[in-house]
Amino acid sequence: MKACVLHNIGDLRYEDVAMPQPQSGEVLLRIRASGICGSDLQRVFEKGTYHFPTIPGHEFAGEIIEAADRSDGWLVGKKAAVFPLLPCRTCASCEMGEYAQCKDYDYYGSRRDGGFAEYLCVKTWNLVLVPDDISYEEAAMCEPAAVAIHALSQAIVTFGDTVAIFGAGTIGMMLAKIARAWGAGRIILADIDEAKLDFAKRLGFKDTINSAQSDPLEAVMAMTGGNGSDVTVEGTGVSAALENSVRVSATFGRVVLMGNPAGSMALSQKAYWEILRKQLTLKGTWNSSFNAARNDWKKAIAAMPELGLRELITHRYTLSQCNQAFDLLRNRNEFVVKAMFINE
Image (cartoon, rainbow, N blue to C red):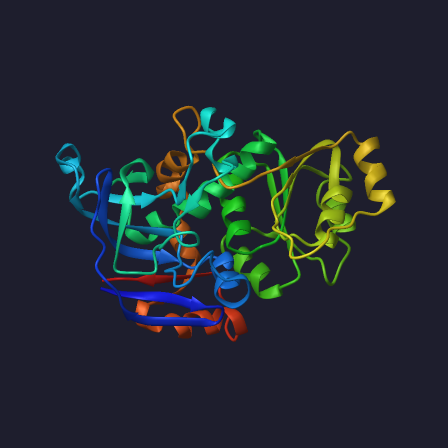
């Protein structure tokens, strides 16, 4: 089969690799769509994967074409997305079903081969079955959608809330769409990229702030009659956005820390005082829930028809165009929200 294989940092090759053979407890998935995440960009050009060679990609969906176990034969022909984390099942977090906090996990696309390929063997436990009326492209958006749902769940968004989101990239747009579906009264998107904010306006999010050109505190207070945001999501991993997230929050507001920082994070004394005086609640968020009690993936699939995530896909490539796709994302020669590999 064909795959995009990372042989070293900066060395991504489209080449022939051996067809995988499913073992007991696995199915063979014909991958039809694979999203490119910002973390994939870091893996290819900066951090690498945990070993070489590795096939990256953790946002993918496809058709089940073979099952190793006869008891799983009913899965053949089904559409599925894939929860990419493989838990150890022995640590304390796994015993509670909180697999995202597993101490010794495996992961499709970084610790083992992932979705930038024509086929992949997947554990049946990790499958998320998808209705026929949801496209493979939408199904491949299930991973970031589940992450966004999980993040907003930490804040407990209620009807009529004002939600401020710092970072208007793919996840930021998903957060906005989910907040709107959950009944938020006002959704404010802040970013330093005017093209992203223009795109958000085309999606119906009229309240935007270019935080490089105006003070987010003044802008949010003007939009909310001086009250501030009930829920604020810091989605950039940048100190300035963290500072602003605290500043714009209303008294007793809920702040969710989601951005993955590239370096140290700093907070001013004044912002720290605001946390105390406004009695803010700060919560971290990581990955998504995938268990019987809380399953963000099933929520994401159920919400797909309403969320309209397909309109976030601005670029589609074949696997053979993998270097072209990654060069574009790295150099940002064009405006991109979500890029995806499509296997027809």
